[in-house]
Image (cartoon, rainbow, N blue to C red; front, side, top):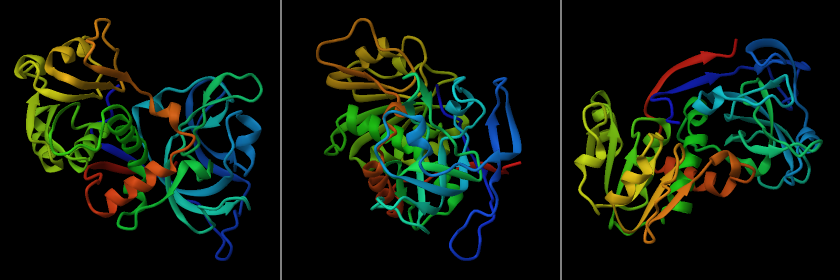
Length: 333
């Protein structure tokens, strides 16, 4: 499913003691999914404790940290939640300050400003069933050290809270499944260029050495996508990209939309030895031997992200990756 066109930031505020970052209350404000599967706000949810992730999930080996959440964001994936462990705090992206960490943590320490995506798919210790980790829509959250990176120094909490999920998704899609980085010799088509993953995808494609970046978006978002580095733009409302682009002209097609038939059209437009990567749609049932196609879900790989976050931090600090459009800030209440 395509990302929200403009990122929305959810800002959480919590009280900290002046010395030592001590949590003053055992209850916090949070946006939760309740036992009747409805989403709602509460100001009386129990503050999570370090060690709780190991008590819930089977695939946890990293040490844990407690974070005062400063900002999060709204993703399409945040609208869909399972019925396990209810009630629970939802939300994936976070940026905040570490207020406590287990003694065996080596990368992250108390007082660090961190960012990450805690929307991992994990297995319940009790039943082995898959469920979402989540927890970012609260004043405090527990996360694995392996899921966190030190926040880029040149952005604030709000922008940092909008970047992790979409940046990790597009980074992995292009690096793991599309052969990035490249040598300024690849033409890439990004379907859904003005969404969150598309916006990041344009910038990463340029940073990774794409020769040309073509995107589909609406006419209203042409200037926005150009500002991110897009070279050619196709108005999806009036044109079909598979009729505009000639056969055998693209090296990579990155699909963030999931329109039916996309993979079939991609087989025709891609060059020999090309890559089709989708995070939203189906793979073709008629693959070509010289085309690599992949379907990828970021949440399945979110237990260990620190290396990717460190690479993304460098790109942000060199202004090769930013979230330049945020539709608004909303308090946690």
